[in-house]
Length: 604
Image 1 (cartoon, one colour):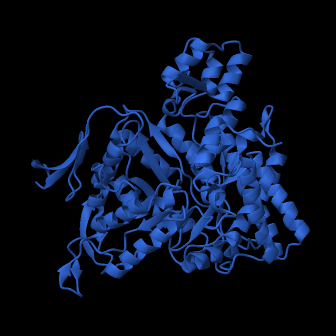
Image 2 (tube, helix red, strand yellow; image 1 turned 90 degrees about the vertical axis):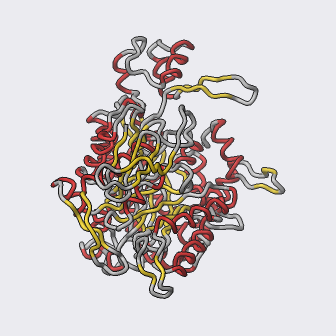
Image 3 (cartoon, rainbow, N blue to C red; image 1 turned 60 degrees about the vertical axis):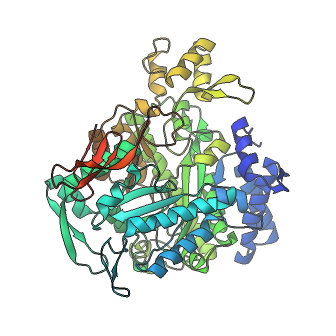
């Protein structure tokens, strides 16, 4: 039976997904699922499927979506079976070190973004500011200056009005302009359409541990141009992230040590949320299973989950052939590796239903089992597809081939995405994030205020006889129940919220999934407003030690544009404030100061 959509889900579908004519919605949700299923299944005709097989596949795909057990990424829901036809979620666009190369990349990004895709860029190949430009005899403006061209272009495009422009900008930690890059978003007016990450190397992390310096290298010449104190740069990254939520870290050497097709080159960038490292011009199609819908009593319905994993892998592989790509280079790169990213959402809902605290050893053990099951079954499904459809074209020379594995249809099969909007449609917690709040107040159109309560908590409260309007109002005030004397201790343990989980609990959950996920894991390490830059550094170091491929830390209230913020913020170059180490002028934002010359920084 089709699942019942929440009011929030219906509002999102009407606003962004359901087909319109002359601005009027002319499609119902069940028609959307049927449209998407039919279009994706039709790709199997070219693969030799019979009409009966195509019809059966369409019925299977429609059922998965209508029951909300599985949903693909937003562009597939929006565009499948419609004229635009672009179905992939994310792309990486190469940025070459020339004026022509930069503006060519801007044009490619524009083509992608107007179809609803997100874009990732590495700016590490661009020569540093002040470097020689031989053709003119002038000096280069550097990657930070040129990045703003991409940001302005995204602002103008707005992805056709369906999805807000999303980008990831990355710079290697050994680029001479890394300190300027770290401080970009201390000015909230800059790079508003970008997430930023520093691509840190193993050499850098070793230097942080040892308290030594590391080399800066001009990417144009390959020549070492200077050195920086690694701990000072690490402090600068943590202080900036504490202040404004950016930059994150990407452990770029680890990504390349594990990436499946090294013969095709090195990975330099990821998609906007960091969960999908991609080669230049690659795209990836994502989809997620709501594991909260597979809870069966005191356990998960593993056989039923196995079936949906196999069907979802088939669906995502079909999307690659059903897609209408924005550039021929993207189609060639995508079909060479046929990367798909199947993940999960509703993880916190599943744990709550199983009476397992998110921040408990039992939850980490179940995460390991879930990630292993997802990997094993998705690989089995990909091998079965390869027997009928052939291996991905870049199979020879891949890590899978070198390891003696049986042929796979897809170079990667698993990713943990943030599932922001599709989790609203599914009515579940996003990705593998903990519950943000158990109850909250929502203002509705007539000015009334309604209290919305997490369904699992509401159910348990009624079962235990503690449910009351007063309890739910109290929980809406605080967000959670830990420390609430009106709530039994065991229920308090079952329902932690994001800010009640310490940073170690957040990072360990991410690492548990990363150990068996082929791509990467998008997860926000939520910190309370009172957290310090030392906490940020601790999260970074733990993520590296536990094998994560990247990390994003967000301290409550730190980012401009958060729904609830207090106090004024300003960013400036303060000519009266000079670095105590080298006397350079400091960038000052709120209570943080950063020297873009030597890396000295302080917050608080």
